[in-house]
Image 1: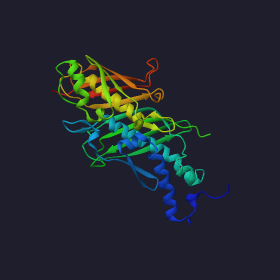
Image 2: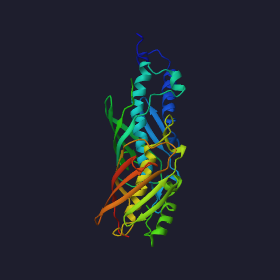
Image 3: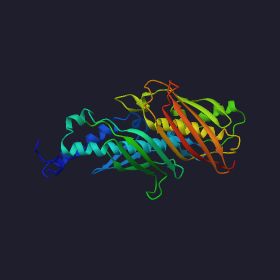
Image 4: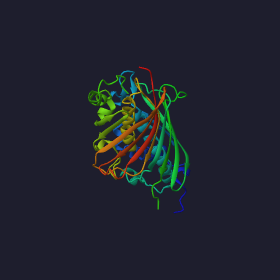
Length: 173
Length: 144
């Protein structure tokens, strides 16, 4: 194919661009049952994702304080890291046209990366409030990737947890 | 983690999960507890799957299981007077847990100072010869 990448097609209607990107994001994040179970959603601004974990009583680990369960925070960060990492190569496939809208709609996405290790720093106790998180792919190689993620609640400059993880990339032929 | 120091191991085992809403939500059960050790199980549940194409449980759910097991091991340690919270937890995933199988996490609090408890844990599916994941962590030690 000699056609230019879709992202470089300035005349492509805005709604079509947004529809493609939102469909891809929904197929990706909506395809992880555990993320659905926790209630995690993703806000998208261009290619930047913010994971949102709305507060729910079932997420509590210490009812005396109360505080979120450490496992919830860890899971939230791991979902954020995996979705953030997958999003980086799905975005590339989508914008260069190797991933079609039909594939995205039918949920025919590339496989998810596998976690090798994941280290979480608990900086503050998680309050009974909504949480937000963003992932940064520090390095993404052919086989391995290193991802950093940070979660906060009321104040972006006061994260309640951060994490670093290594991932095995799916086989991409 | 709940702050009530157990009067005996049996009531500790009974009350521990009941006091943690999220662990109860994930269907965790404490199956053994000793001085600084704990074993917790979590049944397979489709809601906790990470990749529907394989049916494998999400790493996050395994983290939640190990965090709970490590916390239980810390507060069951004789030198820990009060509640605890996770400072840091590192998980290593050796292989995918077999879909449909129950997970068992065994945690051991192997050293305690006045302020920090050091813990390690291993998670198995129904094949106890091949661990699914291991964890090492540090937890706070707080006065009662």
